[in-house]
Image 1 (cartoon, rainbow, N blue to C red):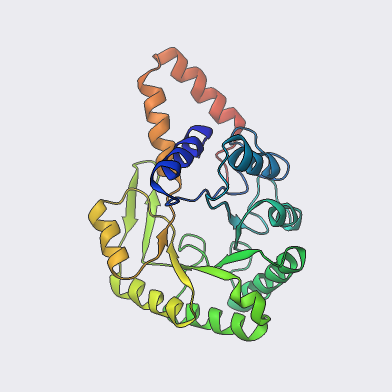
Image 2: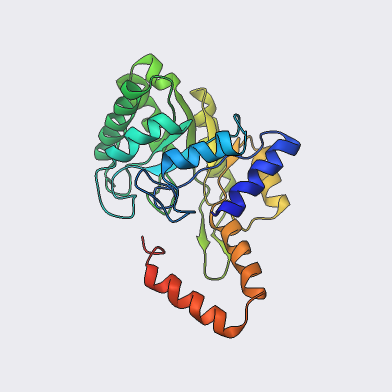
Length: 261
Protein backbone atom coordinates (compact mmCIF):
# COMPACT_ATOMS: atom_id res chain seq x y z
CA UNK A 1 0.00 0.00 0.00
CA UNK A 2 1.17 3.53 -0.79
CA UNK A 3 -0.24 6.98 -1.49
CA UNK A 4 -0.13 6.14 -5.21
CA UNK A 5 -2.21 3.00 -4.63
CA UNK A 6 -4.70 4.96 -2.51
CA UNK A 7 -5.01 7.63 -5.21
CA UNK A 8 -5.47 4.98 -7.91
CA UNK A 9 -8.26 3.26 -5.94
CA UNK A 10 -10.06 6.54 -5.33
CA UNK A 11 -9.76 7.52 -8.98
CA UNK A 12 -11.04 4.11 -10.11
CA UNK A 13 -13.99 4.22 -7.72
CA UNK A 14 -14.87 7.73 -8.88
CA UNK A 15 -15.01 6.57 -12.48
CA UNK A 16 -16.54 3.11 -12.11
CA UNK A 17 -18.33 3.11 -8.74
CA UNK A 18 -17.30 1.96 -5.28
CA UNK A 19 -15.85 -1.41 -6.20
CA UNK A 20 -12.69 -1.26 -4.08
CA UNK A 21 -12.19 -0.40 -0.43
CA UNK A 22 -9.05 0.70 1.41
CA UNK A 23 -7.86 -1.62 4.20
CA UNK A 24 -4.65 -0.47 5.90
CA UNK A 25 -3.03 -2.65 8.52
CA UNK A 26 -1.83 -1.12 11.77
CA UNK A 27 1.73 -0.93 10.49
CA UNK A 28 0.62 0.94 7.40
CA UNK A 29 -1.69 3.53 8.98
CA UNK A 30 -1.91 3.87 12.76
CA UNK A 31 -3.03 6.32 15.45
CA UNK A 32 0.60 7.33 16.03
CA UNK A 33 1.71 7.16 12.39
CA UNK A 34 2.40 4.38 9.90
CA UNK A 35 4.81 3.68 7.07
CA UNK A 36 2.33 4.69 4.35
CA UNK A 37 2.94 8.40 3.77
CA UNK A 38 3.48 8.68 7.55
CA UNK A 39 -0.31 8.93 7.89
CA UNK A 40 -1.98 8.50 11.24
CA UNK A 41 -5.54 7.19 11.25
CA UNK A 42 -7.20 10.60 11.39
CA UNK A 43 -4.98 12.01 8.63
CA UNK A 44 -5.69 9.04 6.38
CA UNK A 45 -9.43 9.44 6.92
CA UNK A 46 -9.22 13.18 6.22
CA UNK A 47 -7.22 12.61 3.04
CA UNK A 48 -9.73 10.13 1.63
CA UNK A 49 -12.87 11.94 2.69
CA UNK A 50 -11.95 15.61 2.35
CA UNK A 51 -8.72 16.12 0.38
CA UNK A 52 -10.04 13.75 -2.30
CA UNK A 53 -13.75 14.54 -1.73
CA UNK A 54 -14.57 10.83 -1.53
CA UNK A 55 -17.30 10.22 1.02
CA UNK A 56 -18.23 6.69 -0.02
CA UNK A 57 -15.11 4.53 -0.54
CA UNK A 58 -15.03 1.97 2.25
CA UNK A 59 -12.28 2.46 4.84
CA UNK A 60 -11.54 -0.64 6.91
CA UNK A 61 -8.97 -1.43 9.53
CA UNK A 62 -7.30 -4.69 8.54
CA UNK A 63 -5.98 -6.99 11.30
CA UNK A 64 -6.71 -4.96 14.41
CA UNK A 65 -5.81 -6.33 17.81
CA UNK A 66 -2.91 -7.10 20.12
CA UNK A 67 0.49 -7.62 18.56
CA UNK A 68 -0.57 -6.36 15.13
CA UNK A 69 1.15 -2.96 15.35
CA UNK A 70 4.74 -1.90 14.77
CA UNK A 71 5.40 -2.25 18.49
CA UNK A 72 3.65 -4.75 20.75
CA UNK A 73 0.58 -3.48 22.62
CA UNK A 74 -2.91 -4.66 23.56
CA UNK A 75 -4.42 -2.89 20.56
CA UNK A 76 -7.04 -0.87 22.41
CA UNK A 77 -5.57 2.59 21.81
CA UNK A 78 -5.61 1.79 18.11
CA UNK A 79 -9.19 0.50 18.29
CA UNK A 80 -10.30 3.67 20.07
CA UNK A 81 -9.00 5.79 17.19
CA UNK A 82 -10.37 3.40 14.57
CA UNK A 83 -13.86 3.79 16.02
CA UNK A 84 -13.76 7.44 14.99
CA UNK A 85 -12.20 7.21 11.56
CA UNK A 86 -12.95 3.90 9.80
CA UNK A 87 -16.15 2.22 8.62
CA UNK A 88 -15.31 -1.40 9.46
CA UNK A 89 -12.83 -2.97 11.86
CA UNK A 90 -11.38 -6.41 11.24
CA UNK A 91 -11.37 -7.94 14.73
CA UNK A 92 -8.36 -10.25 14.65
CA UNK A 93 -7.07 -11.44 18.05
CA UNK A 94 -5.92 -14.77 16.64
CA UNK A 95 -2.23 -13.96 16.26
CA UNK A 96 -1.88 -13.78 20.04
CA UNK A 97 -4.74 -16.13 20.93
CA UNK A 98 -4.39 -19.36 18.95
CA UNK A 99 -6.67 -21.35 21.23
CA UNK A 100 -10.29 -21.22 20.07
CA UNK A 101 -11.86 -20.15 23.37
CA UNK A 102 -9.12 -17.62 24.17
CA UNK A 103 -9.55 -16.09 20.72
CA UNK A 104 -13.33 -16.07 21.04
CA UNK A 105 -13.15 -14.33 24.42
CA UNK A 106 -10.81 -11.63 23.08
CA UNK A 107 -12.92 -11.23 19.94
CA UNK A 108 -15.98 -10.55 22.10
CA UNK A 109 -14.05 -8.08 24.28
CA UNK A 110 -12.84 -6.20 21.19
CA UNK A 111 -16.30 -6.04 19.64
CA UNK A 112 -17.91 -4.86 22.88
CA UNK A 113 -15.23 -2.18 23.34
CA UNK A 114 -15.74 -0.87 19.81
CA UNK A 115 -19.53 -1.06 19.96
CA UNK A 116 -19.74 0.97 23.16
CA UNK A 117 -17.33 3.51 21.64
CA UNK A 118 -19.30 3.75 18.38
CA UNK A 119 -22.57 1.85 18.08
CA UNK A 120 -22.55 2.23 14.29
CA UNK A 121 -19.21 0.47 13.89
CA UNK A 122 -19.24 -2.55 11.57
CA UNK A 123 -17.00 -5.58 11.98
CA UNK A 124 -15.18 -8.35 10.16
CA UNK A 125 -14.38 -11.51 12.12
CA UNK A 126 -12.14 -14.52 11.54
CA UNK A 127 -8.62 -14.52 10.16
CA UNK A 128 -6.48 -15.77 7.31
CA UNK A 129 -4.90 -19.20 7.24
CA UNK A 130 -1.35 -17.91 7.74
CA UNK A 131 -2.36 -16.61 11.18
CA UNK A 132 -4.69 -19.42 12.29
CA UNK A 133 -6.31 -22.17 10.28
CA UNK A 134 -10.06 -22.59 10.78
CA UNK A 135 -12.02 -25.68 9.86
CA UNK A 136 -15.55 -25.36 8.52
CA UNK A 137 -16.87 -26.64 11.86
CA UNK A 138 -14.83 -24.07 13.81
CA UNK A 139 -16.04 -21.23 11.62
CA UNK A 140 -19.63 -22.34 12.22
CA UNK A 141 -18.91 -22.52 15.96
CA UNK A 142 -17.39 -19.03 15.93
CA UNK A 143 -20.50 -17.49 14.42
CA UNK A 144 -22.78 -19.55 16.66
CA UNK A 145 -20.89 -18.47 19.79
CA UNK A 146 -20.85 -14.82 18.71
CA UNK A 147 -24.58 -14.99 17.98
CA UNK A 148 -25.36 -16.19 21.50
CA UNK A 149 -22.74 -14.20 23.44
CA UNK A 150 -23.14 -10.79 21.76
CA UNK A 151 -26.20 -8.57 21.87
CA UNK A 152 -28.41 -8.66 18.79
CA UNK A 153 -27.18 -5.23 17.68
CA UNK A 154 -23.53 -6.21 18.06
CA UNK A 155 -24.00 -9.40 16.06
CA UNK A 156 -25.94 -7.53 13.39
CA UNK A 157 -22.97 -5.17 13.04
CA UNK A 158 -20.75 -8.04 11.88
CA UNK A 159 -20.56 -7.37 8.16
CA UNK A 160 -17.87 -9.76 6.91
CA UNK A 161 -16.49 -13.17 7.88
CA UNK A 162 -13.06 -14.35 6.71
CA UNK A 163 -13.20 -17.64 4.82
CA UNK A 164 -10.23 -19.85 3.93
CA UNK A 165 -9.52 -21.93 0.84
CA UNK A 166 -6.05 -23.32 1.58
CA UNK A 167 -3.97 -20.70 -0.23
CA UNK A 168 -1.12 -18.49 0.95
CA UNK A 169 1.43 -16.06 -0.45
CA UNK A 170 5.07 -16.40 -1.52
CA UNK A 171 6.04 -12.72 -1.58
CA UNK A 172 9.61 -13.30 -2.73
CA UNK A 173 8.46 -15.02 -5.91
CA UNK A 174 5.16 -13.11 -6.20
CA UNK A 175 3.06 -16.28 -6.27
CA UNK A 176 -0.15 -17.51 -4.71
CA UNK A 177 0.76 -20.79 -3.04
CA UNK A 178 -0.88 -23.65 -1.22
CA UNK A 179 -3.58 -25.93 -2.60
CA UNK A 180 -6.88 -24.30 -3.49
CA UNK A 181 -9.72 -26.28 -1.91
CA UNK A 182 -13.00 -25.24 -3.59
CA UNK A 183 -15.07 -27.64 -1.47
CA UNK A 184 -13.81 -26.11 1.77
CA UNK A 185 -14.32 -22.59 0.46
CA UNK A 186 -17.86 -23.32 -0.69
CA UNK A 187 -18.78 -24.83 2.68
CA UNK A 188 -17.41 -21.80 4.51
CA UNK A 189 -19.36 -19.47 2.23
CA UNK A 190 -22.53 -21.41 3.10
CA UNK A 191 -21.77 -20.96 6.81
CA UNK A 192 -21.57 -17.19 6.27
CA UNK A 193 -24.84 -17.11 4.36
CA UNK A 194 -26.56 -19.16 7.08
CA UNK A 195 -25.89 -16.30 9.48
CA UNK A 196 -26.61 -13.54 6.96
CA UNK A 197 -22.98 -12.44 6.69
CA UNK A 198 -20.80 -11.56 3.70
CA UNK A 199 -17.81 -13.79 2.98
CA UNK A 200 -14.32 -12.47 2.38
CA UNK A 201 -11.16 -14.32 1.42
CA UNK A 202 -7.75 -12.89 2.32
CA UNK A 203 -4.52 -13.54 0.35
CA UNK A 204 -6.18 -12.89 -3.00
CA UNK A 205 -2.96 -11.69 -4.63
CA UNK A 206 -1.38 -13.09 -7.80
CA UNK A 207 -4.55 -14.81 -9.01
CA UNK A 208 -5.87 -14.94 -12.58
CA UNK A 209 -9.22 -13.59 -13.72
CA UNK A 210 -10.36 -17.19 -13.97
CA UNK A 211 -9.32 -17.80 -10.34
CA UNK A 212 -11.41 -14.84 -9.19
CA UNK A 213 -14.38 -15.86 -11.31
CA UNK A 214 -14.37 -19.37 -9.82
CA UNK A 215 -14.53 -17.90 -6.33
CA UNK A 216 -17.26 -15.40 -7.09
CA UNK A 217 -19.29 -18.04 -8.93
CA UNK A 218 -19.24 -20.05 -5.68
CA UNK A 219 -20.82 -17.09 -3.91
CA UNK A 220 -17.74 -15.37 -2.44
CA UNK A 221 -18.62 -11.74 -1.75
CA UNK A 222 -15.20 -10.08 -1.58
CA UNK A 223 -11.46 -10.65 -1.58
CA UNK A 224 -8.47 -8.86 -0.03
CA UNK A 225 -5.48 -7.97 -2.20
CA UNK A 226 -2.59 -6.63 -0.16
CA UNK A 227 1.09 -6.80 -1.22
CA UNK A 228 0.61 -7.28 -4.96
CA UNK A 229 -0.13 -3.63 -5.76
CA UNK A 230 2.78 -2.40 -3.67
CA UNK A 231 5.16 -4.86 -5.31
CA UNK A 232 4.05 -3.80 -8.79
CA UNK A 233 4.70 -0.17 -7.88
CA UNK A 234 8.13 -1.09 -6.50
CA UNK A 235 9.05 -2.90 -9.73
CA UNK A 236 8.13 0.19 -11.74
CA UNK A 237 10.41 2.32 -9.57
CA UNK A 238 13.25 -0.20 -9.91
CA UNK A 239 12.91 -0.22 -13.70
CA UNK A 240 13.57 3.53 -13.70
CA UNK A 241 16.54 3.51 -11.31
CA UNK A 242 20.23 2.90 -11.87
CA UNK A 243 22.19 0.36 -9.81
CA UNK A 244 23.60 2.97 -7.41
CA UNK A 245 20.13 4.34 -6.64
CA UNK A 246 18.78 0.83 -6.14
CA UNK A 247 21.60 0.06 -3.68
CA UNK A 248 20.88 3.22 -1.66
CA UNK A 249 17.15 2.49 -1.66
CA UNK A 250 17.79 -1.08 -0.56
CA UNK A 251 19.92 0.08 2.38
CA UNK A 252 17.27 2.61 3.38
CA UNK A 253 14.56 -0.05 3.38
CA UNK A 254 16.67 -2.53 5.33
CA UNK A 255 17.64 0.02 7.98
CA UNK A 256 14.04 1.13 8.49
CA UNK A 257 13.01 -2.41 9.56
CA UNK A 258 9.46 -1.51 8.59
CA UNK A 259 9.27 -4.83 6.75
CA UNK A 260 9.54 -6.74 10.01
CA UNK A 261 6.47 -8.38 11.57
